Length: 73
Image (cartoon, rainbow, N blue to C red; front, side, top):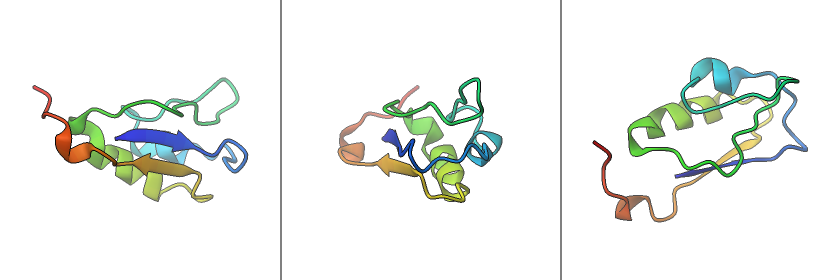
């Protein structure tokens, strides 16, 4: 799973990081800067939770190829 952030839509509410701090990082101005990061399998549920709480729906999770990824230890 890969994170995609629409930086033009993100308003810096930081709810993603509040709900999933292990997945979403914020820049110095409070905007999500996790664009392009690959989420470990063990954090997929957290990634989805953070994305669901984005008021602007600026977070997209690319699940393509997820079934082919081996589970992490």
